[in-house]
Each structure stands twice: as structure tokens, then as C-alpha cells.
Length: 80
Image (cartoon, rainbow, N blue to C red; front, side):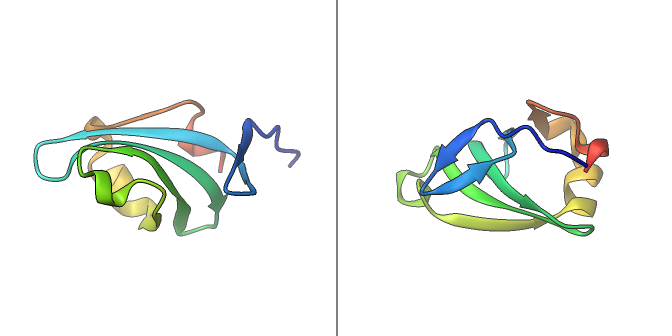
């Protein structure tokens, strides 16, 4: 699969952006930089908690799928 990269952040290629609106975890915008069969890896670009901005994260794809109503994507998650 050939990936068209969107941009770079902290010298890592951004594959897509993920937006989350959650009462439990707050609002965030993440740049996803790596996708595996089970995990998404990335960097927080925005978060209601300023201490999380520019921090890295990993989240299980299953968790994203389970709470899909909280997420928006710049590309479909199914293609990864």
C-alpha cells in the first residue's frame, strides 16, 4: 500500500489526524504517525490538558472502534 503523507510533526510523518470529543477524556487532536494491525501511534497536537500537547501516545484500534462515536478522522480507519 502506498501512503500519501499529510505533513510532518516532530520530524515524524503524519499519516492522518484523529479528533476526539469525550466527556471522560476531554477534547483532543492527534497526529497519527504509525499504524500497526492492533495499535495507532501518534502525537497530541491539541488537548484540553495543555500538559499533554506534544506528548506521544498509543491506543488500541479496538478501543477506537469500541468508542467510534467519540472520534473523527481525516482518513478512514478501515484502510489501515
